Amino acid sequence: MPRRFQRLAMTITMLMNKIIWVVVSTSSSREADKIGKEVLRERLCACYGIIPRIKSVYYWPPKSSNLEESKGPLLTLETLPRHYKAIIKLVKKLHSDKVPFIGQWKMEGVGKDFYNWVKKEAGK
Image (cartoon, rainbow, N blue to C red; front, side, top):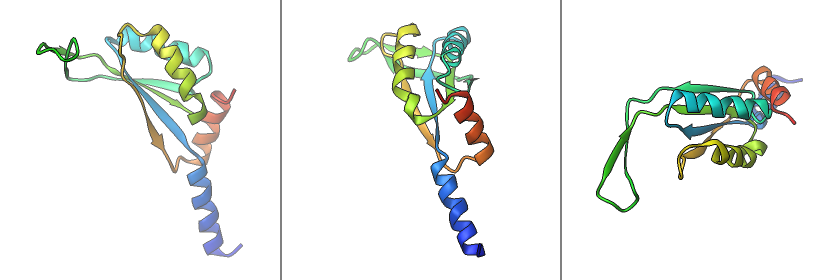
């Protein structure tokens, strides 16, 4: 195969190998670990990580003038896009906050070996 076609094939493969990081704000490392383990047990993610935060500042209750601060860590879940809705449902069920932050970062160009591992672990 000519070199330019090899590069094109590699680029297409990298664009197809999409995973997402689901990011969840949590109130404590304990809560992050509890949620992460449950999502992992359900095979909705391949792995999870807990990232410490220095500070989060917000108004609570909403529309009040009361500023709240927390240091709750971020939970990251490495998974496939098709599991996002199921993860949201499970996180809302387990989370202590009435309005938890749940979002996603799309990771493109993931190496084939890593993508295949995530697909195998969270493929259901």
